[in-house]
Image (cartoon, rainbow, N blue to C red; front, side, top):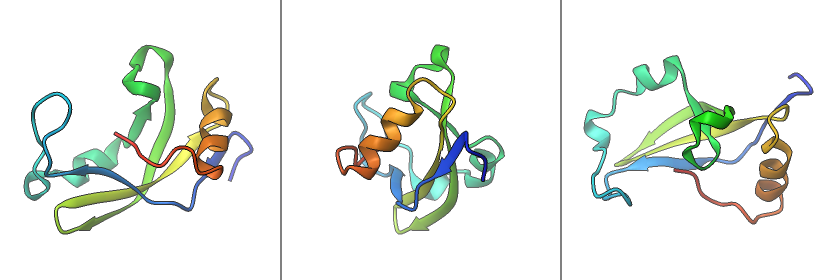
Length: 95
């Protein structure tokens, strides 16, 4: 893998059937995972203006939860910080 990307061997639950902070839910039964896999990107704190900081791989569905592993974009200004936080055990969730 390139020096500008690093895959983390840790699964994150990226969605489930619970109500989110915006007051709605994404039901896993209707989740179109093949559509998500076409462009499985993530933004730091949902801020699209600052660019892509993560790409999701190795999707897995278990019951009503969808899990994936992050590949961090180390060329992004937040990339190394996120890597350090995940590997240090301080960042344990994704949304």
